[in-house]
Length: 521
Image: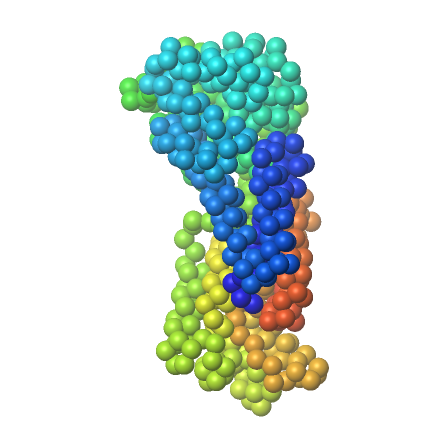
């Protein structure tokens, strides 16, 4: 497989889900045009000139899809941190890569928020006035932002109750403002029931920041200081220090620690911007409602279920996702693979069959002749830069969750033993099918085994703990396995047999480890 073919696969596997998601959500229609156009160009170029189809479609994918999406994620992070100036500057560049879905107007909107943050409410109001008359998401967000900046929560609720309810329940920004306003005005039952109503939509759109923000409001107004602090450690780590202290003090106040909370709020108010100053002033003169007196039995059930969901996400949401936690075993395995690749280059080249054979590539007939060490050495060798790069990216994506869940010892046991057993099974099958001279190298067998282990962990969480989060992540694993099978079948240089044995062996070993030892929390 060459890089051109890999690019075509990347384009298809990223554009098709985005196209379907945008079509089903009936929002962000501009992404239908972008992803659809790139797919059409990739298909046409594959028919006319396959040798450059990946390069052309991959370049368009990079410029008009990857860069805008990654950049916009950064903009939203800056907005959540209330760093509106930096967000506005970045949005001013990104809007030209995607001049649709309200991106063109976003810098001006952020400029208004920047002015409001400095207390220049009249100027901010003047900018936002042009949006207020528009029956659009941008217009409604403009009005809600003005109310939020001045902590006019009761007026915000009155305005939203006069709007078409369906329109703002589908808008994550308005939902977050609305549910916060319910908490600020003491309607904790309304806040919790509103969370139930909006969480499926927020999960469907993968808006984890909005979902965890609403959860944080519920926990803070119910006096759960430690749970709020827990959310700030990872899901809401982008919040500013002042905002974290504000919500922690709110939780303390709701828990009944009035003196401690007031002292914390006064300390934060001295260095806060205009919106936070108003929020603190409101909190000091309008303390949170007492959850012990206000919450109904049904609301308490929702509250405990929210607590359970957060624990489940801590345990299962890291599967098949990037993490920035320190996973030393995964880093060590990546390092060993790179060192082995350096040996390949120094001794004759990573694509030289003789060099790979001397360094320990798997050849079934050689293994059967007594060279059993090849079962282990082969999982650290790679055929070319592209082979190494794709496998190490896969290990970086999949390995950390298994390491953090099982612990370093069991993780390395699963990785190495699964790799060796899979290589042994491959050798047996190859000899019995007349392919005893076939050569096999690569960490992908062990990486597929980690996917099998991940599937075992998630299946256990779904069946034994009835975890919704585990069930959703298990579906993702099954989709990845399906895509990998199609990839293996259509690319002759990829070992379908090796990957399949790795997946099955990993699943079996994962279940053995989970039965023998309790999972680390």
